Every structure is written in C-alpha cells, then in structure tokens.
Length: 303
Image 1 (cartoon, rainbow, N blue to C red):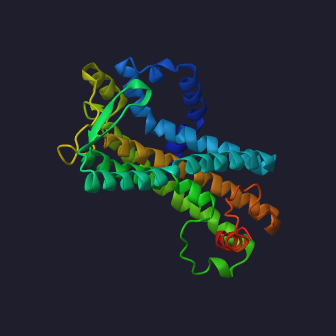
Image 2 (cartoon, one colour):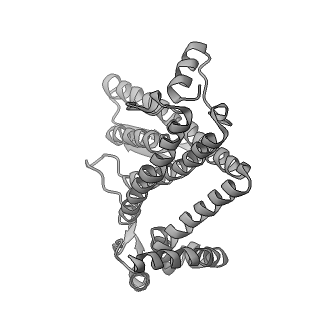
Image 3 (cartoon, one colour):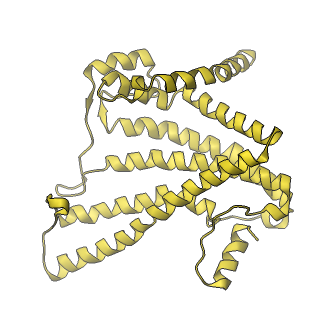
C-alpha cells in the first residue's frame, strides 16, 4: 500500500515535467511523417504519464477554484459546456441528413430502379452502389450517439431513473451529482477510453499495438510501421469506412470525460452558492412552446 501511495505521489510530482516536455517537443509526437512520432503519440495517448497529467491539471484547477476564485471554475464550466453544446448542435444535423438520405434511397431503388448514386462536389466524382449508401446511414446514427451524448447531458435531457433524487434538498442533490461524476462517470469513461484507444489504432495501422506494449518496444515496431486503414465492409458493395466508428468511440469518451469534469465543477459551485445558482450560465435550448420549455426545465432540474 505504501509503495502504491509513493508511486502515485511520484507521478503527480512528475506531471508538470511531462506536460512541459510534451509542449516543448511537439515534433517528437506530432510529426507523423516520422513513424517513431506516431508510435509515441499512440503510447502517450493512453499512458500513465498522460493520465496523471490530466488528473493533476484537474486537481490544480479545482484547488484554485475552491481556495482562490470560484470564477475560475465557472469559466471552465462555461467553456466545456459551450464545447459540448456546439459539437452536439452541429452533429445533431446528421439525424436530418440520415432521414433525407434514406428517403432518397427508397425512391431511387424502388421507383426509379437506380443501382448507384454519383455525386461530384468541386469537380470530383464519387460513385457508390446503393447498398453502400444504405449501410452508411449507420455512420450518421453513430455520429448522433457519440457526439450528442454530452450535449444531451448538458441540456439535462438524459434519461433519469429517479428514486430519491427529486425528494432530497438542493444541496443533497449536488452532493449526489459530485459523487456520481467523480466515482462513476470519470472512472467508467476512463476505462472505456483505454480500450477504445488501442482498438482504434489496430484498425488504422500495423503492426498491432496493445495496452501492454512499452514505449521501447513500440519504437522498435516503428521500423515496420505502415498505415493500414480498415476498408473492409460487411458486404461486397457495402460501406467500407468502418474505421470511422472506432474514431467516434474515442471521441465519445473524450466528450463524456470533459462533461463529467464540467458536471463536477458545476455541482460543486451550485452546492456552494445555493439553490439560486442552479442552472447558472447554462445554455439551454428552447422550443418556443412555453409549456414544453417549462416541462423540460423541471425534468432537467434547472427550475
């Protein structure tokens, strides 16, 4: 136990050094024309060093906000929620695109008996079989699921299984929210990210890298590195860019992790400042229907 505590403290102490090293030497991990830089990027993207850099940064910002100025935390909350809302509102249009494309496919296939769709933006021709466009609809669905999850959470529109939450006081709710974000959201999404990170890279390049590979071994593997982006579909003429789904899983993990941090900070600030601060600076969507907006506000806990 003592060894583990010493190990944690050592990594926390080294976190500023590792962060400075990464910022001062961007070519070592961002120059992807060099295979060794790619391998460093893959290794550090899910490494112990990166984990402690993120968590130490989170702890320092939290400590500054608690001990010095709460406005620091409010600024971070507003920034992270604006990011989640912006990405979510943009990605939500994929739902409309999915519907329109499905209607178009039905008409072209059943009525006009067209076998393929060809588009030519900016003078370039892109032609695929109708089955390709049909399977591609799953990508739009994945975009909505992965990139709108934080947006939905920030809007208070996620599904609640409420047994005691609505019956307790404002401050007790905020304690529940802080506990949930710190001990459920962050650990769960961190574990998911660690699996998703290497799962993604296994479908983008060779040789195969795993979570157990150390940096020295991965630098040796850089000698035989080559891009090998997955282009295999489930059917001969079907959608063949399934590597995008793996990238979306990683994006999903990052979005949820950032929202978990923002939710912890918001819950703490609303716990400190009292019930009048509930929903402070929140950028909630409105429908134009006063009754429906009120129902959403009650459901989200902002009123």
